[in-house]
Length: 132
Image 1 (cartoon, one colour):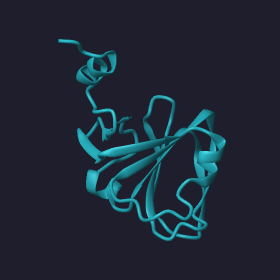
Image 2 (cartoon, rainbow, N blue to C red):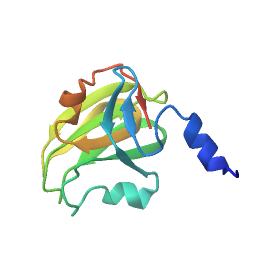
Image 3 (tube, one colour):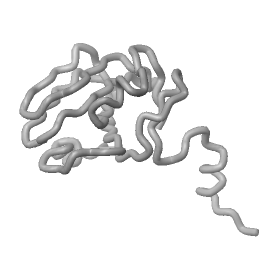
Image 4 (cartoon, one colour):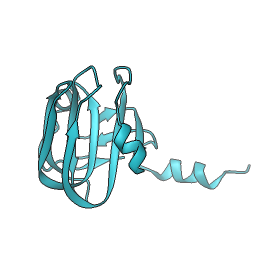
């Protein structure tokens, strides 16, 4: 039997490759993820997209910084988590409404955009650790 290196990695991971999980609460935030690390993908974000149902968009930054987010041309509300280098929740923005702006109070290394209601449903709080 031949097992690929990727298969071995998936077997030994605690979280399936596509899942975003709150490790502190041992709860699944979303079943699927998309990592946006390029400048272009981060700039486009969710603009002109259909409502996200079970996918989390992860914005990865090269160094911690205050994050300016806008919901221009996003026609539905979302939840947002701001994480430090250790993927610890340092700020939460629930029910981020269309055509509004939000500037983080803290410097973050990651931002995760989630379907509206995900934070409340998963009981995610400050200092929880997220895995993806």
